Length: 153
Image (cartoon, rainbow, N blue to C red; front, side, top):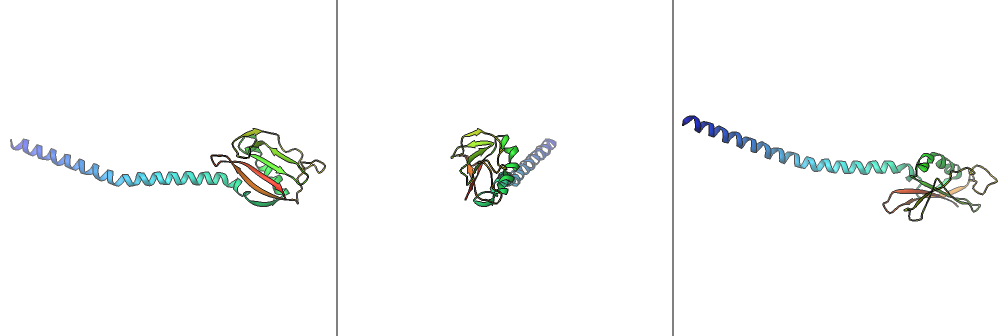
């Protein structure tokens, strides 16, 4: 009888100890889980911002024609992949989309040609390297950057 009582007490103590350890673990790791979720969300936002940074340098800025030509070269791979369209409106009246034509609301993207005549001074698509262009960004309804617009002033 004495042996079964001590076994029961040992079993009860062990059960109480296990329950206490589980309670402590839940109390310790619950806030850590929430912090991990917050950190993951912040990391995702930072990654998206860094991805868009290469386009955002052109948002609401005035740049030279040579920088416009450099942007056309720089974003050729993104453009041919269908990720970005570039609109260039020159002082000669040329209004051309390169790589992709993007609607004004940014939701419709249609593939177009590559910039082939931007260095040909006799062509209307010619971009004067010393000309000044107002740059802006076009986003779609999901706030994804779909195009860069350069309009000569």
